[in-house]
Image (cartoon, rainbow, N blue to C red; front, side, top):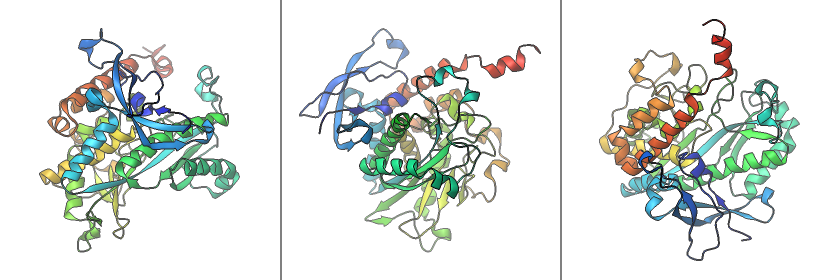
Length: 422
C-alpha cells in the first residue's frame, strides 16, 4: 500500500454542511482525527471545524490506474458522528435486515454523460457550445460502441483493476450518454463500488481531455440520467423474493417489501432524490416515476419487478437519478422495504402500461421539489425510526441549505421569458 487516500465523495454529496479536510494519515488502529466537521445545525453556526473521528476501511483499498501505484481507500465517520455518516446509515439499515434473519444483495446502474470539454475552460463556456461525445440518441448502438471501442476498453480495464466488475456497458439514449451496470454483490459492498465508480469515471474522463457528469438532468431537451438499483433478499442462501407457486413468482415477502417501498416513498424520497436538479428528471414521458407505483417488468414504474429463476428474481428501484448518494439511496430502498415487512404493508394493484399516464391524485404524486421532499422527510416518524433522529435532523438541514443556495438564483430562461413582457 503506497499511501492512504480517502475517497470522501460520499461526505461531499451528503450534507452541504459537512466538509472533509486534511488527508488521511497512517494509523495502525485504523482511526484518525484529521477530518473537519462543520456542524449542520443552524443553532451552532458559531461552532465550526471541530474534529471528527474517521475509520479507514482497509478492505476497500483499490489500485486505480490514473493514480499510478497509489491505492484508494474509503473512510467513514466513527464515534460521535457515526450517526450522520451515510455509510453508517446503510449499515444501520442492513443490521435491521440481519436482525430479521435476512441479507440483501444489490447492483447499481449508472447513466453518465461525456463531453469533449476541458475542465479548465468549461465554466466560462456557454452550455450551448459544450460538445457531447456523440450526437443524437443512439441507445445500444453497435456502430457507436465499435467506433469507441478504445474508450470502452479503458473503462472496462479500469473497473477490472479496481475490483468493480461490470455486467454491461453501452451507449444509452441521449447525446454522449453511456450506461454502466455494476455487477450485483453484498449490499454494502455494492454501495462502496458505486461511490468509487462515480469518482473514478470523472477522474478518468479528465485524463482524456473530457468531462463526465452524473447530473440527474443536464438539459430540458435531453432525457434524464438514472441511477437504478437492483435489490434481492435472501435467507439461508435462498431468494426470499421468489415463490414458485405465486403469480410471476412474487412471494408474499416481496409483496410486503414493495408495499413498504411504495408506502414510504414520498416520505423517504429525498434520500434517493437529494438535489435541486434531481426533481427536473421526475417528469412524465422520460422513463422516470412521477408517483409511487410498481409493475411486472414495467420500466415506467417506480419499482419494477424482474421475474426470473431463483438466482435472478429481483426488483429494480427506479426512483433515483445518477446524482444519488449510493449509501443513502440504497438505505432508502431497503429501509422502506424492511419496514413494509415489519408492518405487513399492503401492495396496491400493479400497473400495466405507462405509469406516468395513470390518473392519480396530486397528493399521491412524488414530491415536486427538494423543499417539499425535505419537509416530508423531516416530519416523518418512520424516517426517525429507521434512520435515527439525529441523522434526519442533520440531513434535512443540509437539504434546506441546498434549496436556499439554488432557489433564489435568477436564470437566463427567466430573463428571456419575463424581461420585456412583464
